[in-house]
Length: 237
Image 1 (cartoon, rainbow, N blue to C red):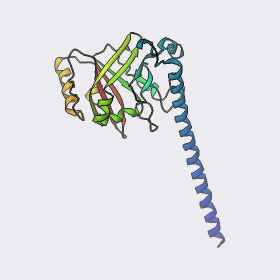
Image 2: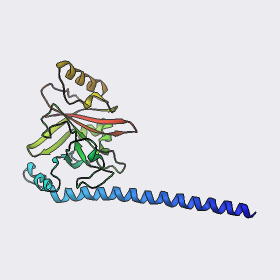
Image 3: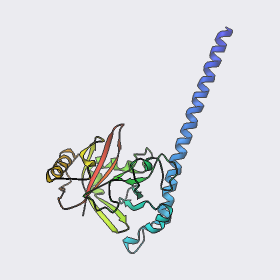
Image 4: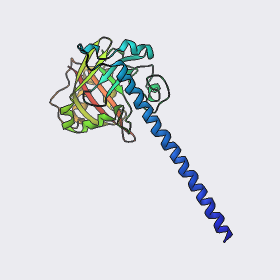
């Protein structure tokens, strides 16, 4: 009888420790989400102006560059949660776990592929963002699985130091991590043709817009499941 009491006591102690540990990590997880949301909310409040007479005055990139000189623009999709600064550094790893202030963060920061030139002049520019469970960062891209949502949000705007760039969405699809859409350099006409063909064949629905040979492409990428990626591909208007 005494042994059973001891076993039960040990069992309950272990359960309490496990529950306590799980609660600790859950609280910390929620706190990190909240901290990241508040941080980007403050950036929006302090450095953007939706009532600006001139749209080029929507965001103060120069003031933001004093906080983080690696900023290269601001991405915005109207009537969505995607409204963030975009940065670029020497690799595609750093901003996966660093926020705009270069502090550790699960949300990371929206960032451009290190292979791009930073001025949106490459034939294809790629921008990455986490798929956060609270709907922040690039989680909202998943809504483009719906054709109706695409019709209501067909344009991506990038505010840069060189002016405003607008992109019309041409394709949406789920891809593997090594998908051809992650190519930036096209050495031959054939390689670019293969790029265009793959995008056309993989898209979830028709947008009525074909990828043009003489227009630059923007690829927005976020995670989808454990190994796949969700891509929103647009071309400059």
